[in-house]
Length: 222
Image 1 (tube, rainbow, N blue to C red):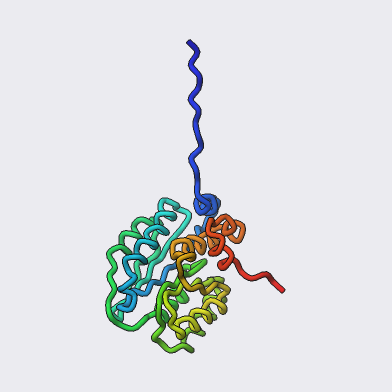
Image 2 (cartoon, rainbow, N blue to C red; image 1 turned 135 degrees about the vertical axis):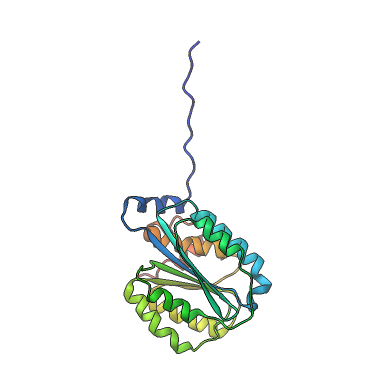
């Protein structure tokens, strides 16, 4: 009886996995920062946001070529979890976060990345309000731009001040400012920003969500 060799089917890989895998041969992994608003105004949508954020962390889990740094704020305090190479550990810490009353703390969070010896390739800001001095975002935004850090701002709700400030931060740093919605879920946008930071525009083009992909791609040069 002749034994035929078993057919080995290759494992399917996601676009994010393929894009980030290229960084394994490089000395410096891609560094992505996360700044998450955990103030009281987000409490009504917190469970949904946590589900979306967990999905993003699962996409990144196990990829040693990525370093993540999570900062979240609430109750007038910014909590910095430092750079982590294990996305599941970051997800576990994020899952324990609960919303607390207090003003937003986006500026101190931006300054933390601005002054960090380790440069972030991209920052992802998530929130629904901005309750600080609008002009004070300019200096850290300029400095982040000069470091080559793009900031992607993903906004819940229709707060006009938050929309204006997030637009300014994104335009200054070369990132994007996008309002979340049914066709623009947080997980797709965050994964797209990670793709862009890890593998550039070619990697982002493989993001399944066409609308998110289109909005995250930089506009064509004139």
